[in-house]
Image (cartoon, rainbow, N blue to C red):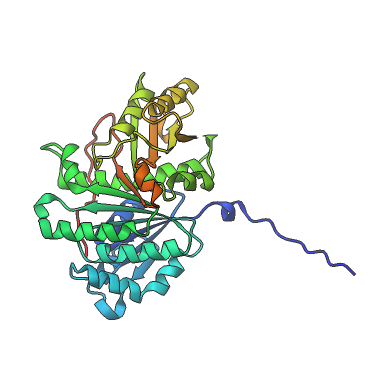
Length: 358
């Protein structure tokens, strides 16, 4: 007698790619707090720290206390070796938090103890699990001294071994977008916006209804081991909003000397309200296309966001810029700019990347 096996189709929620954002150390944890406060949807948040007090103040539902035996919850004391050892001690917890993820953003401030030491260990665990991994890190201000900068560079070198894409934000470049009236808090909000906009541009393309939606395979094609890259977001209103938003996405005042020239793959996300015109989408996409070689693989998506009615937002990720490095499998190094607002609105912000938690 034959047996009929019935299978229950997976729910729509289970079929969506799982994107996890992990904030490591004080700076990374504060960046995650600001992302949660901005009500960013489509991803899970995790914070990891050696400082138990910092963890208790996090808004994230999922928290990892790193190195309970080694640091006893008191932090890494600005020592990357302590941060690394703490993460190694907690490797099973890290692996459990990563389980089921398709894409992971690891954010940290480089130059301190926990972020510098633990972020590479977490990235290694993600790579071993076959997860598409993106690092988003800051480098210290010049006034913080050569020792901290040297520590940051060593941490970045370690992290590059394991991530697919690395977004580097030199804090010194905040002076390019700040003026005499820019508060310390507002300046670091700009750095946080880099992470938020980067994650949003990816999640929107896959999860928000729109004209052209992309799947996770498209994202992996552009971001997986493609060499150096750049990334930016621009937003504009008015008659020339499409062109101005595209120009702002390309301009990137926080760039670390990266360019779209020679890119092998480009991901474009154009977002607008229901008033977004076909002509505008064409104009913005073509402006970005002018920056890259004709044979570049351009992957395009467009989504609707009723909250920005009257405005147009353009996000771009260009990868495979350095062909020589692409021949030798290398992680992507990405430099990123914040959204270029039409009007600079003064609003309170919570410092995050500027706080170099243990």
